[in-house]
Image (cartoon, rainbow, N blue to C red; front, top):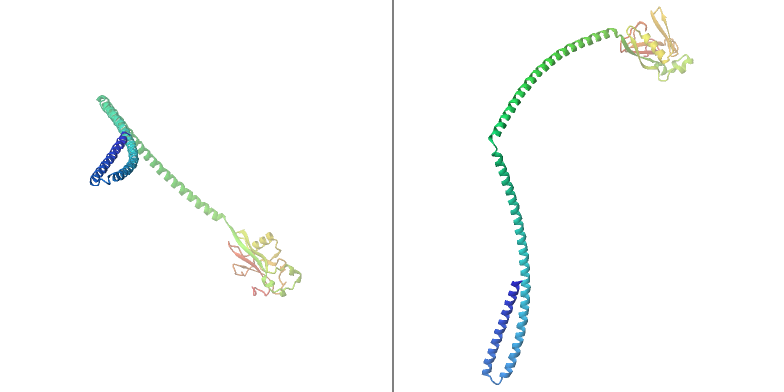
Amino acid sequence: MEKKLKNQKLKKYALIGLAILVAVGIFAGVSLSGKDDPANAPEEQTIEQETTQEETTEASETQDEAGETAEAEDAEKEDKEDKSDKSDKKDADKKDDKKAEEEKSEDKKEESKEESKEEAKAPDNQSDTQAKETEKKEEKSKDTKKKDSKDKDSKNKDSKNKDSKNKDSKNKDSKKEDSKKEDSKKEEAKTDDSLTVYVQILCYTLSNDMSQLENEAIRNYIPSNGVILGRTAYKGKQGETVYDALSSVCKSNGVQLDANYRSSYGSVYVEGIGYLYEFDAGAKSGWMYSVNGVFPNYGCSSYELHDGDEIKWLYTCEGIGADL
């Protein structure tokens, strides 16, 4: 504020000096002109006085305007200076805070160094005892490690021996089991005499041409597709015959069967199956059987079964299977 007042005063004094100089110059000019023309002196003096008054008023106005602008500029400068002073103070405060923190950290470091020095200045006896104790501990740990390694080696040896013994015993046991299995298989092969065969009963030669049927009473028993019994499995034993399979299948499936033993054939002779008898479709009609597609030349009770045999009982109308 003091600076502002000083600046304003100086500016006012400067403006007043200028006005005085201007007035002095005007008066000097008037006096010179009056000497040259005395008749016009009073008028010129009045005119000059008026002009000087106007000029002084204009000069004062300009001085006032200049003073106001100067004051405004000074106020702006002072505001800027105040702001810069405040920012400088803030920066200085921050720097002071940082310095204080750095000083604190340095103090802490010095304290820690002093403590470490004090610890280092401890008596040498303690360090010697500690070193001895550490050496003893290391020796003990070495001894324990050696003992542990020896125990591990002995355990590994024992485990290996046990494993080898177990393997030997397992191998012996497995060999015994294998031999037992082989023996059981052989015994099963000896004792297992079961077998399975498949039986069918068909009369498609007659069903395809019912005009050959002479016994009209059985017409309703003849299936339209010629299948009296479809492919049926029979589980029997070795030594059984084709007739054994046929009689068992017919009983289990409700199919009518008429057969008897004939000494002339030396075997059982099948006369009728499913109410269809020989000679019902002509003098050469009757039942025949095949095994695996082959018609044997002997009776059905003389043909022994084999596992997987395919047996078909077929009704022929033309005799001896000419139409089959």
